[in-house]
Length: 279
Length: 260
Image (cartoon, rainbow over all chains, first blue to last red; front, side, top):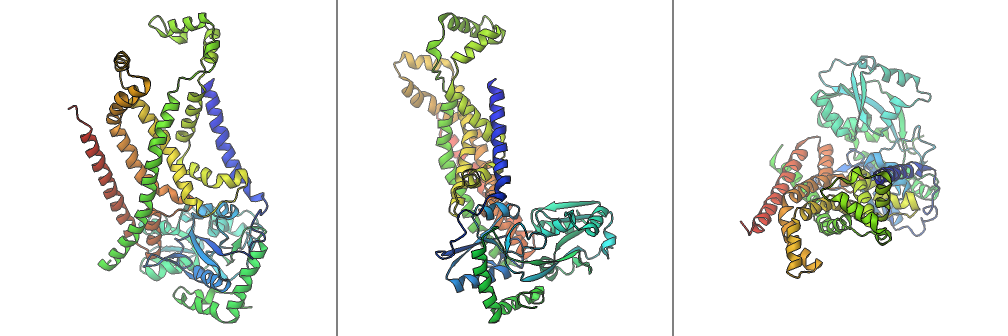
């Protein structure tokens, strides 16, 4: 009797915890609707294994294009920037529970418009395939029967698995021997280098970063998997904070600071990818 | 890879090692005493309904527990009545507690402690709570394992020693503190060392609630510099850390070996 009761309680607790986590998305923004007036800190959630948007430099500090932008936004608003590296697969829990104020880390808005409150897009991104330098894969069609890897929870994964209006990419994904997932892109590149997988589907910025460092090992396929745009994601409904950050970003575009920051990342072609205020 | 880069990676990892150490020492500090409390609960014989039990039932059960036969051979009704009158609520609660903590992944427990307050009760959680949650989750998880190790130690002391203590006029507290506890400490050292070493390596779980410790930092440097060298250095760090832990535990074990 006791044994069954204990088993039941354990299961009940687990289910309760899981249900609690799953149901969180529908909850309304409780506290952070009207807090920009007294805001003193601004917490950015980012994946610290996502160069050049957010990574650790030689001095051990978190840097990157997105974090530089966030720093400038904070300086202009008198906020203290808190750079919070997060486990990317927990990003929704972090954002919804209010432990981070925004996700700002090469975050794709295309296809996710209804799930977050987004800023205006600021980078034109494309998802590309990276293969080994000596590989015989030249086009997307050559990927048939090959093992492809991508990051869990990434936009590349969405592009390959999303079932709405995506027949072409789904057909492509169906030709793969398998589509693997990994927690971070660095291990994906390690798997590729060691031959465990044949190709990586990855955002072009991250691909460029790896190719700059290892042009002898990797090669990028010309034809992209898909094109999309990056934006800053706030918790659904948190428009006040979004508007304030957006206004500051617009200011930075107007006085040239935005382009100056992008120019620092010209090695990875970021200066040609930024799109805020370009139309 | 030149010496400069190696030095740099090692320095950055040393900073991360501090964070891992913080988790390690605080978890030990809280989980070891907490584990003892859990053991007491687990071994609690408190049965509030016992006085209601009819005398015949008590005798029947006593007989069943002696060499005459097994409790399993009793009729259903007697067993059920026994379970009811001799129900031990504290022991039962602690058994459930241990079952949950040992039966679910530490990763899930970290999620539950950190996000639980918000998703279950709507309490907004702060950034500072991250580290607190890591320590709470690790401490209760390890307390459950330590509790069972302590119980093994306590139950290994023969009944004869308790009887001797009673004859010598020791009360229950004195018997435990002066006779049972010191012997328990000696006997549980090897499994406690096991757990402690596992804890050093488990600290890397803290990143599931975004608390970056050494292994996470190694992965981050590895991503930024596109080399696996930081992972290798992190491995060496863990190995040395555990070497020190094993050495210290061995010293303690030898020091307590005063009867041999």
